[in-house]
Length: 311
Image (cartoon, rainbow, N blue to C red; front, side, top):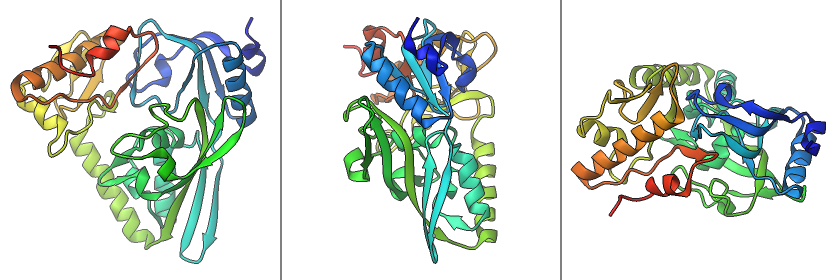
């Protein structure tokens, strides 16, 4: 038995409940831990045993293969928050497992501005930092001061935004260009503002999300927006709003969302992504880049198929 079991990791555990699409197979090993030291030890053990490692935040921007995920799936749940206040400015430190939207709402109600755009962003601090999460004109890159990461040898490092090379929905952490690094926490710049006005902003953004985005199970935006255009507009213009494969559907409310229903599979969602890409390419000659990440036992051919149009 793997040494991971001694830390509380469980074999062949379903991931479906931990993802917003509610599809996909099990993890070979799953560790959900609120102890930073356990997460770091598990990372080192997995590397020592030659096991692949997948980090899981809120599960809101990924598609887990029906065949599951090899190696260790590590879900940090440590969620400590600290504030260092200097008059009307503050540095917020939040650990990786903290809910991003819940924290953003709480800060806004307390009169701290900087993260109010995130009040409807699903997922955790760790996932938001890795993916440069954003909404309503704001993004992590606008307010991030630094991020704490741990490498496979257990060494703690502090990276500034320049090291992450942030751009739209991208960071070097997301592509693992800096190696296998576990995000353990991040620092953000905040400023004081009128709590009443911030509460009004929060309500307006939440109302806007309710009006424009589906409330069913989804993984958020399927594609990043191409330069000068919107992925949802292109998919809708291609006539795919409401298109269905199996138990997965292009949302009738917003064409850049795929929603799932009971009995859906990852294969249903994948096939719908391919259909959206190919039909938009056929009609508009724009290749939509997935914002959703494929996780687990997808073949290289399946991964490559999403990268560029077939010749």
